[in-house]
Image 1 (cartoon, helix red, strand yellow):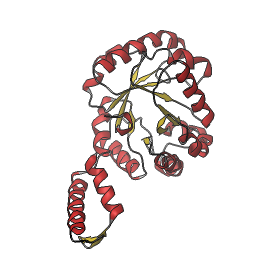
Image 2: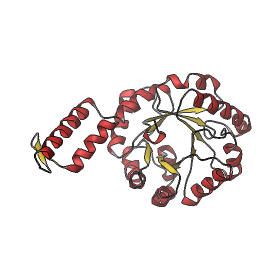
Image 3: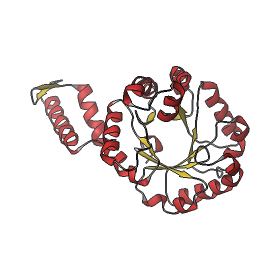
Image 4: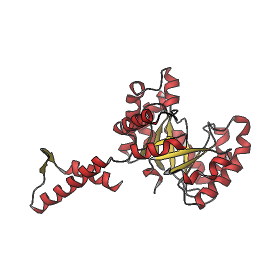
Length: 276
């Protein structure tokens, strides 16, 4: 699976070998080795060789791997040095406020001889306003929306009513360039009430998110289910495709199904659901 098609991305602190050991058994589409928020400042240096070993092990086990680095320019080069040469890793850059940050990261990666993709995390009001320019930078494969950081920046709770509009702005920028769009229109912190968490995931899908990070293995199956078509949607999609193909065989460009007109955009949506 290409990382941009990932529904669930499970965070793994670089300093937690016990979590890394079973990471590929959790069902996540991708794994994020984290050098940023999950690692306290005094352990960053210790975490980097652990991250390098984790990346090698996870790639060898066939996992889709991302590395979340620190946004601090003084840390970026040391963080990037943990990527094994030639490893198929996506670099996740947090706290992106401007396209220039991504361009600088791409230049660093090129200087290191690393041809890896970049996922830019947008977590502030300024980043939201700059999202169209950030999404246009070469090498980007995904945009992420940091609900908790954005809510903190505006001094409000991370609820859909607060986050819906900024999230959709970032999502429109991502979709305009064919990128994945990761995150939730609310807090990712819920690890007990999976019914409530599942409702948030389904709402986020309706707002344009294509997947989400997970901070606990319990969230993974909920995210996978919520960001995939439901059985009812798949049944509808199969019937749409069949009806559209029958219409074309008759030389017609559109057809009625269940009392509703089916034309090419609706067929395209149905085919995308079936492909996923």
